[in-house]
Length: 389
Image (tube, rainbow, N blue to C red; front, top):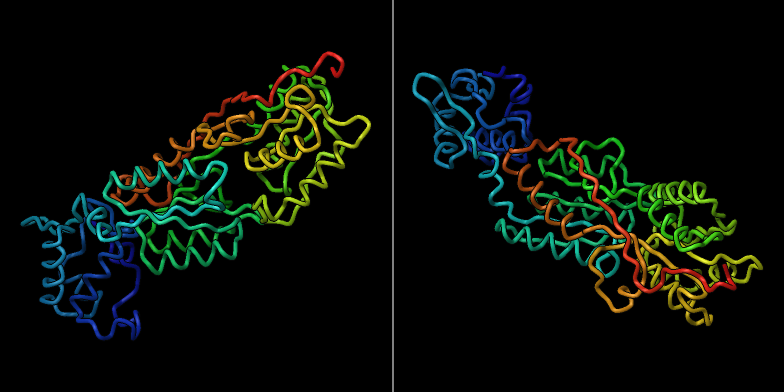
């Protein structure tokens, strides 16, 4: 049996303030135990202190404790064994969370890139486990993300899968608020420094390397890197890309192009800046013969601009982006990309959340899985005409 302090800390009901003063003592004891179960501090099979110990801890009569335990037993949260004591039921955490049937998906964008497949697969997996789904769009803005998180806590959602905002990086305290409220979190695509939570990550350096190797195999020797802003993620893409180029004797364009305001991911908002940066790059006397860009929606914009400039792909220039294995639009089907299976990621995120809700996994677990990447060639990746190589 765990000690009282280890189990419940030093908090008494009197310390919990006026917010609970209208509730009866047995209800407050009952809710306190539920909170400990929900937050993973009382794990399945844990023995509770004796009635007398709990009566002393909560400054109440043993009959009051007995009444609270009876209510918890009727809810299937504890089991009382004659002569041995009271124990947390093996399904307690799942049962205490059963009313919190909403799983939330927090993402930077909803209509392009990886995100349609991520949403669809997460929703499908959530419905199979009898959960509703809530989608929250942050526009890659940490302030908006912080407000979303507070609303999710206020609504007591059952779990959150989140693609953390990247510019600037998501602060640990935002995710920690969810975990302190007993809400499981799965990090998707990238980690958050200082947070221990399951991670379904992308192999950013490998993606960059695969893009570089694909261009080298097609005979390209002058290539460019194109990204809307400098982040930890784009730095990893670039690092892998440069490693492949160095090994293949390929030259990276000096005007490798970071542009745009921090946090902005909307291609409509960036349209003028993309066009200006691309024209500047393509007007160089030794212009690149291939471009690697970090997101499929960016690649689509570059495809349209390059076509307007009269350039053919891949005869005049090759283009490769990063995105989802499922190519949703006709234009996306044309563009070469280093892809990951976002449908698999979405399903796995929902599964992990339910495992944490049931107590099968602790809320703070360092389990991680890196999604495999592969190259989709489309029609924009190929060898240049002989006169251009």
